[in-house]
Image (cartoon, rainbow, N blue to C red; front, side, top):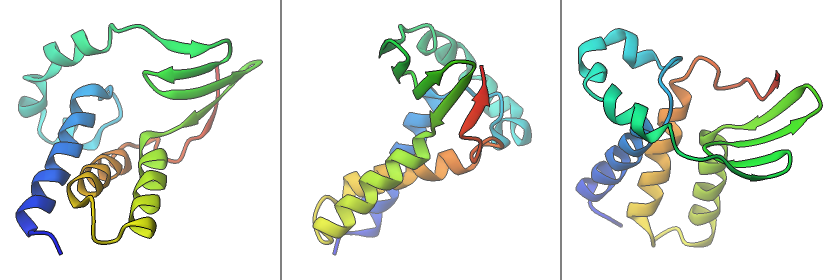
Length: 123
């Protein structure tokens, strides 16, 4: 079993990665602690100007989306991180503890959004 410090550092790392790379317009902690997260806004604006990567109606970066006619199917980051985490826990329960905690931290970050369960939306 890994150390609690390794788990904590991994979870904080995963949470921080997604806090810096995900837009914050629906994030709960941004409203609760506005001064803390406003300092990150300049960095976040630069990160969000990156290119979109995908093929035809399927987008991979900055988020996983499938656009069909006037609807978008959005696979939130907490969903795919949870699948990877479940796979790692099932196949190697004693290994990759840091990676598992990074995925868990990112999934926890995703649960803090208001629209976390909105999968299908109008384009």
